[in-house]
Length: 116
View (spheres, rainbow, N blue to C red):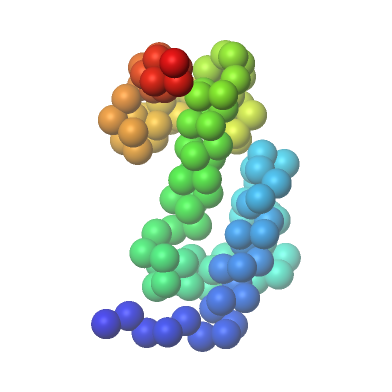
């Protein structure tokens, strides 16, 4: 049974969530949070309560934003990749396929076909 998050833990998670709302401006995640909280503490809190690392959390947000952009815009996949905060296209493709089971191109084709 998971323990209830301590108030301090909740504040850490909430602070990071609020900072990630403005991605990709906050692409330098360790820099933006390290001023307020030690990175090692933040990692422990995330793993304890969300069962994922801060990097996994941010990548999940980036992939969700990429899915929306692929579905509702005509921007190129490379442009979307950069806009959501990935510097490495290969890493973006890998994480996208891991999350959706599809390449970004296949996802776009499937989602655009289902809108009509």
